[in-house]
Length: 318
Image 1 (cartoon, one colour):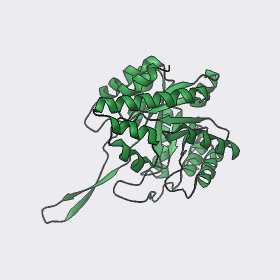
Image 2 (cartoon, one colour):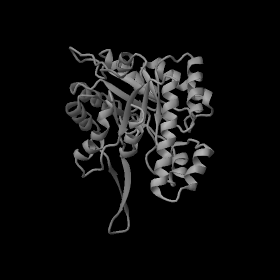
Image 3 (cartoon, one colour):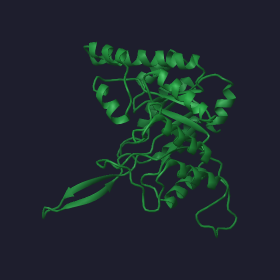
Image 4 (cartoon, one colour):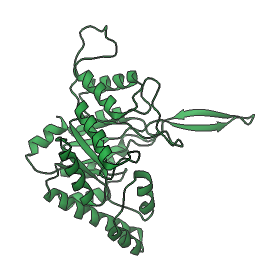
């Protein structure tokens, strides 16, 4: 079932969902199941699976020269999605990127998903390659997420790159895109970022999932801006419980989000790691309750590979 159909079926009840990371290369699928199993009691209608693009590493050769190698540390997105749908009978939502994909790669990726009965995708531009400052598209790839959305919509209409194909079948993907309550780091302003988001929706996006935020007012103001701009699709808030003191600096640096002073001061008072995790859980529960009261369609949690704190939060809410 499509994500938007799950939302319609809920008839105003806030749903629970979460996002998982593929395991590091060398690990097996059981590590994913061990992560998902405790959260299934909260009946998530769908689970997101991230896609991690290639990285470049340099290996020193005997003569002192450096050899550039391409590595993928977290492969397996498509296989994990198929395993989730088979084992748990819930919908999997694979992430698909512009970065690292040509248009041909994208088409083949989507064909694989279609064959597996996966009909939801989250279309993202993706970040720059690690150790590079700016995003760079593949030579025959997409530079912007809106163009990736257009290709997926085209395939839904039976439009393939090879126009001479006969008996072309249509796919039926429900397309999600990302939204940024505190604006994308490359956007000149939040208003301009909302206009770019509107272009993604106009291209065919069916729903929006936000970047994490720790101040609900940022989400509410973002939703208001989107509605004023004419964006009417569901806007799903993305949430992450803060788990370590180190995240006070890592999260703003990596995700360009602000942490409220009240939360920051409470974390700094903590003497142990467990105390920090508890503060993060309680803050996220408070956020979640307010969002449910405000009618958020889904609460989408970024688990970052750990389910214990998400389980504690969901136990209080769902």
